[in-house]
Length: 187
Image 1 (tube, helix red, strand yellow):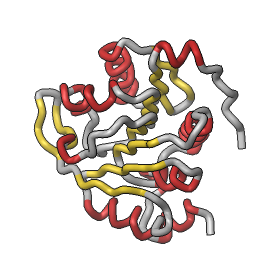
Image 2 (tube, one colour):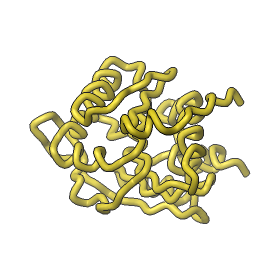
Image 3 (cartoon, helix red, strand yellow):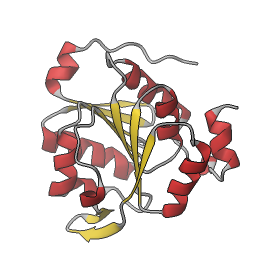
């Protein structure tokens, strides 16, 4: 059974799922690494499931235990580490408690949460986590808040940002110059 169908059967909601065009961008980025990358998904859901099914080592973070339970039920056989990170007030608004997120080097970070605002990524803890990633993909970058967030993250990290449909892709400058960008598949 396809992973998206399993996720839907366990309570997934298409209104909050990653956009299909964002999946194509995320998949292209996953496939551009010579080895399956370590992916951090902020906002646990379908993106992490699909990435794990392609071989990525996924750590999925969410502030809502029922979203983590949904991923756990839909992706039992997949290597996904689930992390509950309650929201906390920050100087930038609500954000994840990044102290609960395993401190590792993630080659790829997929930002699709939290659902109540993502400005917490602009805190020192959030930027410290993001700066170690080779690539950051932000979903819903067609929304003004996420578009501005991606631009702000890129500026603060000294990186370039490219908007591709509903996604924003933020790369290290050395990585953007070194690595050829494969075309985004249409299927």
